[in-house]
Length: 142
Image (cartoon, rainbow, N blue to C red; front, side, top):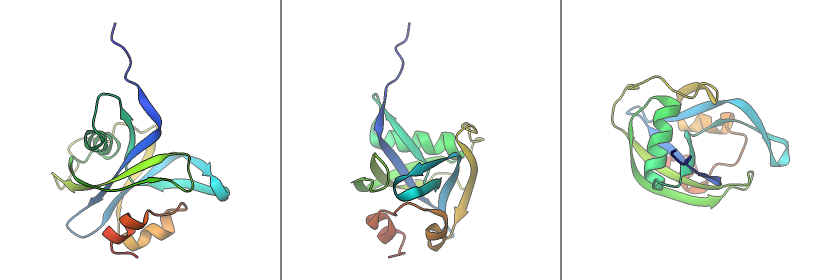
């Protein structure tokens, strides 16, 4: 019998994916989560928990594919931080689209209800939690 893959509960990898219009890929979560300061986590960068048998970059590529249907390549890790609003350690990865259109349908409808491209300046209207300063700098919204 195959042993189940373990995932770290408090460590996630998130992908910062830009298209050729300069828009960033975000996902709307099915279940809203209340976080510190009575904030509600509804929109997020695609990503998720790392399996014990994969690297950070492999994790973010896999998670973006299953959550959004987009095939990407992890280019570089932008930041690693203890999130100030959530009890997690988050690694933010700059990712490059390998295909301009999704190559499959998102396969986690129980977790994600929408996949959209937005202008980076719109993130402040969608995200209720703090944006990592290095990510904001990369997106030129500081």
